[in-house]
Amino acid sequence: MRSDTLRVLLWRRALDPHLGRWSLPGGRLRPDEDVETSVRRQLKEKVDVRRIEHVEQLAVFSDPHRVPGPRVVATAFLALVPSDADPEVPEDTEWHDVAKLPRTAFDHEAIVLRARDRLRSKLSYTNLGFALAPDEFTISALRGLYSAALGYRVSATNLQRVLSRRGLLVPTGHTAPPGRAGGRPAALFSFAGKGMQITDPFAVFKPPNR
Amino acid sequence: MRSDTLRVLLWRRALDPHLGRWSLPGGRLRPDEDVETSVRRQLKEKVDVRRIEHVEQLAVFSDPHRVPGPRVVATAFLALVPSDADPEVPEDTEWHDVAKLPRTAFDHEAIVLRARDRLRSKLSYTNLGFALAPDEFTISALRGLYSAALGYRVSATNLQRVLSRRGLLVPTGHTAPPGRAGGRPAALFSFAGKGMQITDPFAVFKPPNR
DNA sequence: CCGGTTTTCGCCTTATAATCGAAAACCGTG
DNA sequence: CACGGTTTTCGATTATAAGGCGAAAACCGG
Image (cartoon, rainbow over all chains, first blue to last red; front, top):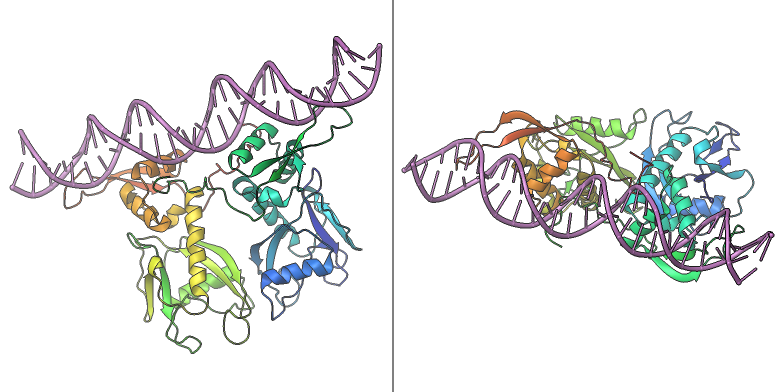
């Protein structure tokens, strides 16, 4: 996630099935690890991504013909890094705007879109924003992130109020330097916690009392 | 799902790792099928379940030690049948109350609980009720189903209003025979559609206008 | 016809989200 | 240093969704 675009880390395939096309980082599962530790290992190995704030299972992709040759079952994951992390990426690896994906290898485009959809819905009913935002941020910066991820303009006013009421947003007291064009300096905020947690408005039909 | 309890179909293992314990139906993935068709096949083969109204991926369970011996990666699914289906089950297979699970094989208890949680949350923000309810039902019957699945008493009044406003509930015009104790005969309803669809109140932060 | 029972419906309250506009706090310039 | 231009912030108001409650409706058996 850079400033105002939702992005995904892809790398050019160096091997032959679909050589040269962009593909998601990944690799084989070792016999002594579960899928999540495998994913974390692969991210550390192949790309230098520090500060992975969130990792979650996305879905299994298992179409017998999703890759040429013998069938390969893939367990796709969604992993998020803050917008200010934007790490050095190794050779043949680039961040791509999810809205303008290049030609991808295999079914990776479908996987990316699924991940995007997952992110979109979870942004609304969880605190997942913490995984995209820097440690400190202004409301309008946050607005930018949410807009980019969700795909539509969100109101800064409303975003602040909703997140505040949910107790997710805490003011740091600090204030950001005003932009080159002047304007009131923005207050800095940070997210309350770091693990993902859903925000109840879920349990419609109400738990007994409360 | 029987009347007022959330239930899961388990069968006694006939083979040795954990012989005799209750386990989820399942089996190996064939090289020419994807995981979902595999699940549907297995359900048809091993248990005579007609009217499977919903099937969705739950999660991958891949702990290296989840089963003794060489590691087995499992892709767990959530499948739902209407409460009135309650099919004939073959030998060594039984419906078990999810609230009072017996000793299960491997990590199957964890899987069942995960499935239960998934069902619970989706009941609130999707039309997934259609997969649990008969084609026609009274509001109080539906209330029973939701209460059992969610684990807390839901108000029939509110349930009806919420589902109606969402356009999920349509009156059939028919009316159910009153119970043995008398009382006003209940109107019969049915769900609007059959595929799962999420009910927007999701997109908080608002799509532009509307 | 009458009490007992269950369902249905309307009215009211609460919670959450969205809209709007004005005030606050900064810039650079004359 | 007052001024327009700019961006952020905040309060007041409206809209929408959900929950509580009780009265009315519609059936039973006697």
